[in-house]
Image (cartoon, rainbow, N blue to C red; front, side, top):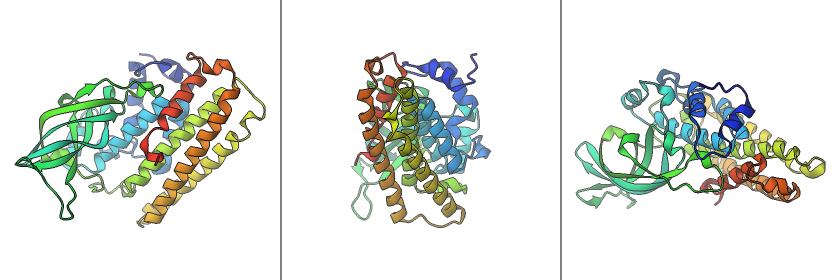
Length: 338
């Protein structure tokens, strides 16, 4: 088995490929990267917010697909905190390093209640890392006796579910210009019966660890934000190999500033959860606004620089071209586009 011992080797192993080779997947498992946020009692790294963010940013700086895939899949493994302890233990009891959740946040199917079980059917798009997943997560509208169940306010009842890979059919439809090895395919479930313990509510936690006290919206904002920073930094590294001078006068200080912003917000969030204080809606909105704004600024800078890098930067066999495509594929994620 190939040993991966430096960043450039890791980049070369997957450059231009549509999926990660087995050597990269083995490295991810050895480093236990799917389980950045998973408690140690389930075989995870149990990283703090600041530790995990630094790790994700470093991976994105190595390669966009690598950072994006580990971020989204480790973010799905974060749902271990939402599962009943018995269910979590049963999933992570054997080879926890190879447990990899992923799926969709869309409500694209139905779950018909049948006693203490649900029969699930539907099709969901954009499951990052689909070929690498051991379990798929999905959201479904709850039905009973053929009719949708509603809450008292009239809204439909929706539950999230974790299904084993064997219950899912992958639809290989990821044809994007970038983040190719993230293999963000769609998947389909057809009349699969699962016990109610396979369901969970994303803001209801069973684990006491500080990381699970962070509102999921804040967790999502920060973990994706560092991916854009990592890819933009990688873009500058590769671009300086093509053109030096004052071309980087805007991007370099921007990256320094945004790194300081992320650190400030991560430290604040950790301080709040350590003191068991609630994170206010105002703070959540501030973090989201700053993340959205900084990504827009980074995007503008990359667009401004790219036309001055020469025709070599447009070649599909060049690292800078892959980074550009990865970054601008990532900007299409809905989290910062609204």
